[in-house]
Image 1 (cartoon, rainbow, N blue to C red):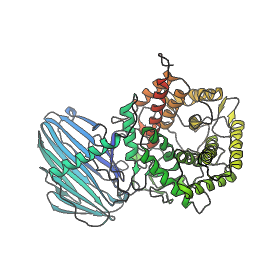
Image 2: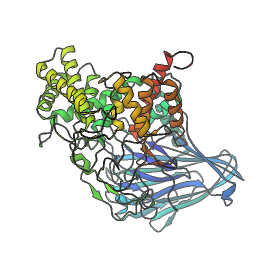
Image 3: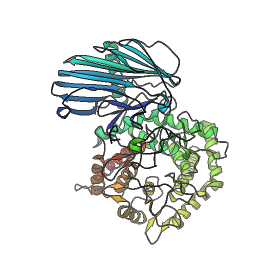
Amino acid sequence: MNGYPQIADHGMIGDLQTAALVSGDGTIDWWCTPRFDSPSLFASILDSGRGGHCRLAADVDRADETTVRQLYLPDTAILVTRFMGPGGVGEVADYMEPNTSAMPSGRHRLVRLARVVRGSLPFTFTCRPRFDYGRAPHTLALHDDRSAVFQGAGTNLHLQAAGPITLRPDGEDVVADFTLQAGQTAAIVLTSDSDGDQPVPPVTPDSARDSFETCRDFWHDWLRASRYRGRWRDMVNRSAITLKLLTYAPTGAPIAAATMGLPEQIGGERNWDYRYTWVRDASLSVRALIDLGFVEEAQAFRTWLRERLIVGRASGEPLQIMYRIDGDPLLTEEVLGHLEGYRQSRPVRAGNAAADQLQLDIYGEAADALAQAQEVGGIRGWRSFAKLLDWLADTWDRPDEGIWETRGGRQEFTYSRLMTWVAFDRGIRMATAYSRPADLVRWRSVRDAVFDQIVDRGWNSERQAFVQHYGTDVLDASLLLMPRVGFISPRDPAWLSTLDAIDKELVSDSLVYRYDPAASPDGLRGSEGTFNLCSFLYVEALARAGRLQQARYAFDKMLTYANHVGLFAEEIGPSGEQLGNFPQAFTHLALIAAAIALDEQLEGAAPDGR
């Protein structure tokens, strides 16, 4: 549909507090500031008319003779869009200087550098911000032909230019046209400022070059900590950078995705806000980070998680399933009815009402994340964790909404019970290893009771498989985590038959569905694509089961669904298109885990790969 690029037709840039999406034609069509979960300045990806955008691109009349390519500067988060036209070759480099400060900042700089490397190319520039998801008006003050400021909704957006650019007003927006010859460079800097009307330093060619080098050097230095030397280094490095970009530096809290409202089905209602920190997703990322060597990032999240345990909740539940990046538990969901939605996928939601759901599995994922440290936050941290397990010993045996946040009623989900077993297993291990006070007799009793319940009620003898919830024969791809968490051996006959059942029913040419909504109604209309997280979990399960040829083929096929710069959304649609919020942290952490598992198993495999 006109005005909407494919979801996959984007790269992401960010400064570790905010993130923006840049489409393949040089348009910034998503940027929220000063935080990931703030209202947007640019949101044309959700409404091409009202959302706002900023475009910097070659302006070539013969569009059919122009080739556009987008790539990342290797091992960085600098995104380069190249334009190859009849008159020359040019490119636009987009980036944000990383801000690793422990203090949140109200000021964020997005830099756009245009240059021509061969011949001559004309460029066009438009900046049409729309504050507060397009709900708030703004005013324009054009100071001179190189400097302007947009004012609206508690935020100023400063626009500065350097090089042969003359800015001119277009109503309350700004446009420009300019031509660059080979060797010439122009710079445009967008500075969002919610801290007040403070002066913004002028932009010069030298300052633009210095900021580019600073950003490049940061990512090269950061990636040197990676221990990964396996077969898929480019994809693993890109996934690691993506996870870093999706982490809020002041708190260490990772978000699930950079966007909100992107549909799991075009034209459907499964359009959620993923700019928050899920205890589950973030906890599962800890192992991937540690395996890669990024210990500081893993420790920062564990510190954030321990603080949530210590604070607790007034409701009596120690944790809720998700929080804002600063730990705020209030995520009121509202419908932004003025936005038409990506390709008319409505409603567009901000906030997430699933925060109020009961999902008991989060306690297992949290325990697993904490157990991977040598301590859990000193005496105070241990007491909070032990108190959680004492509470869970009394409350674990309840129906809940499950890992997939279904809105069709609570069930006794097998995955929730699985992670309850993990919570007690990890707690017992930590108490024993570090000689911490704990009610070990009771914890062991509950752990064993959960194990017996899963085996007795979560196993379906007719399907010869573990199933989604008790009393059903429906399969669920979340159970692909059973071997990883140590509940069952990856080559146990009961697990292999479960893997066979999943392969037969939920797998489509290496792509894996979460579950079958027709067989297990989830309270929502429409359908969804295959789930990328599950597809990579499937690869890992195959590898650890010794099915290496099948695992490697499935993994390599999955990599073909990555977009042009190596990013994944949440799902893959029926035509191979990417669907859902983008890029998805869950997908990239599972990619890392699958690559590591494959490398480990292939190292010990026979020459024929078995």
